[in-house]
Length: 231
Image 1 (cartoon, rainbow, N blue to C red):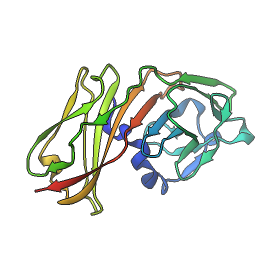
Image 2: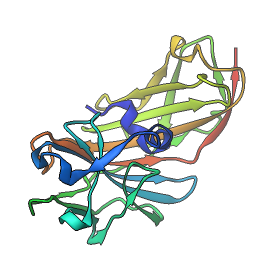
Image 3: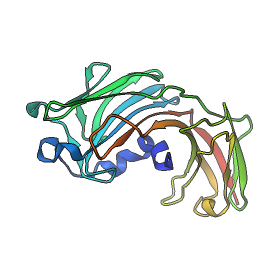
C-alpha cells in the first residue's frame, strides 16, 4: 500500500528531517539498513529531486549517511549521490521531468543492490474551475488524468499560513478517478486564501534490498493551485 505521507514526502519532509540526528552507515548491521529511493517531479518548479534515504532498522529508524571512506556509496544512473543534510538523504536534482533510472547502493561489505524506478508513471491535474473548497461539507474531487492502476495513488494537500490548519486526502483504489474530501478532515482549515498541491505516485515495495526492505517510487506533483476556503 502507498501511504499518503509518501505521496508528499518531498514536499513536507524537509522541515521534519532537518532536526533528526544521523549516523554513519558503517556503525550499524548492514543487513538492517532500510532503503528508500525516489524520483519526485514538481511541475511548479519543473525540477526532479532524486532521493536515496537510508535508515537503521526500518522506516522510522535513525537516518544513515553513506561514507566514502568505508566503501559505502549510492548512485543514480552512474552518478554518485552526495549526502545532503537538508534532505536527510543522498540527493541530486535535475531540470525537467525524469521518470526512469536506476539506483545502485553498495554497503560497507561490498554488496551492491540495484533498483530501477517502476514503469507506468502517470501525470495528474486539476479540473478547470477548481477554485473553492467548502469547509463544512464533503466534496468529491475529480482529477484530470487516467484512472489509478495497481500500486498507484493520488493525494491532495491543502495548506494555509495558519498553524495546524491544513488537510490531507488520498486514494489508492484501483480504477479510481476521484477522491472524497470529507468534512471532518477539513475542520482545521482556515477560511480565506489557501494553496492546494496535487500529487500522483507509483511505488514498488518488492525491491532488491537488505532484509528489512524498503521501497522505490516515482511521484508527480502538478502545478500548485490557489483556492479560497469558504465556511
